[in-house]
Length: 299
Image 1: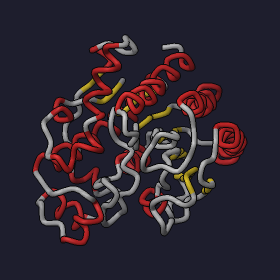
Image 2 (image 1 turned 180 degrees about the vertical axis):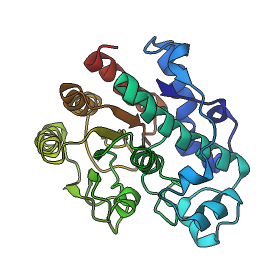
Image 3 (image 1 turned 135 degrees about the vertical axis):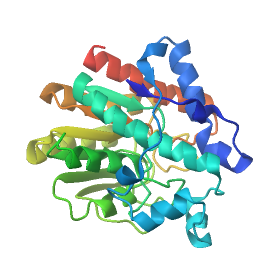
């Protein structure tokens, strides 16, 4: 199942459009190519305050919902506060929780948005306000749907907020493989970080990832996986510093999905970043993630 809500398609202010417009277009692309059918989508509601505060401080969530964030926090997030933005964020977070529950039944589920890994326990930054996969992971633990969770973050930027949130939670193992010289310039410490040099290509990237995944699954023995599949690892990305090809990015997804399929571990996938100048490149890379999943999971 794939989370989608008409709120993603609402017109947005100009300063919001750059990181957000791809989500509605990805929905259309998946349908147009026949990768999914309309019945494969579900429309989430808004996440509850109780769920959001499983990982975020109550005061921060109140300020975010109430449009009373201080100026410093607003600047770090990068968005102008608006009710529309709040509604969208609350919806996408619930989409990841619902997707995780669907994955427990079906083996895999997606959020067509999400991957908001820069949101800390008490603040947001980098276009991220609430950490969808962190909240969903805490939800599974809270309601005893999972005991040992692995978060695989392959966005070009480190999942710094996720690392901070789970820094003292042994039930959640955080793994981030990212560009060393890219944002955030002051990194947090994940349970495992692989920092890549600028212009790392497919061969080196995939070799390191394959080795790391084997060790991670064998050592941590997760019973649920969250995957942040940002496509800002592409050579064309204007906010990334790696040199992966479209084909290399798809092979990356395959490595992750095959590990879960082989071990029969459910996985929830959020789309994460993607900032290539041509939207067609972003959409192709994100669509490939769904295509690879269909082949690996035979769905």
